[in-house]
Image 1 (tube, rainbow, N blue to C red):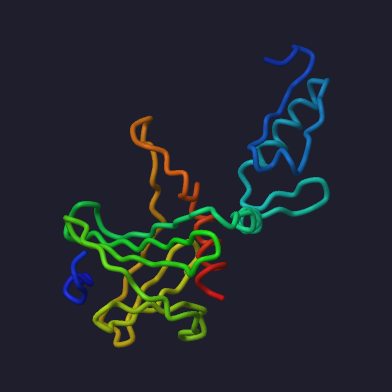
Image 2: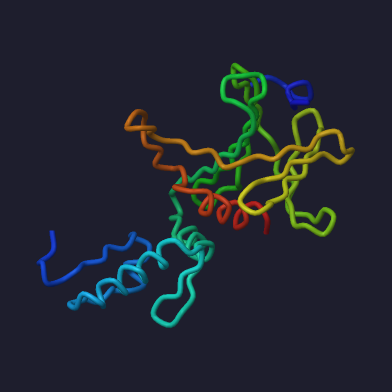
Length: 205
């Protein structure tokens, strides 16, 4: 059951090999120039492992995507607006539901909920952090008094009410160009890791 019925409307030299790491790794480790054939093979193998493991061992330290995402959240400026979008269902259909979590500078975090084929929107009130069945969560309230619990579950949000009538999983929604078509969203996050780090920092505290 959707919440619609519960809410109001709304080129390198041949003798060398150059390993180019993603931007997030370049500041952590400068990969050495390799000259021998055997070392080239070992180097390529090491680089492959480095780029594919969820946690990478670099220069004697372990680095995980989650802390990296968290550190990028720390750099949000006082005047910058950021938004994370989580949705379920198919866009522009009756099954579609979406939460927008945003903050601008040092203002109070804002939450909006939209639903349905015409994406009707309503502003929600953030009630603050809480614990539900041992899991950290935060509560939001609709204008009609309905209260929902939003629980970070991995990189997704589980949304439930207090009576067991509503329970859905919302996933981070990418907003930007697809196959070169569309407009880049400057205020949006680049992936679900950054988005979840943002949620935990500003909505569960």
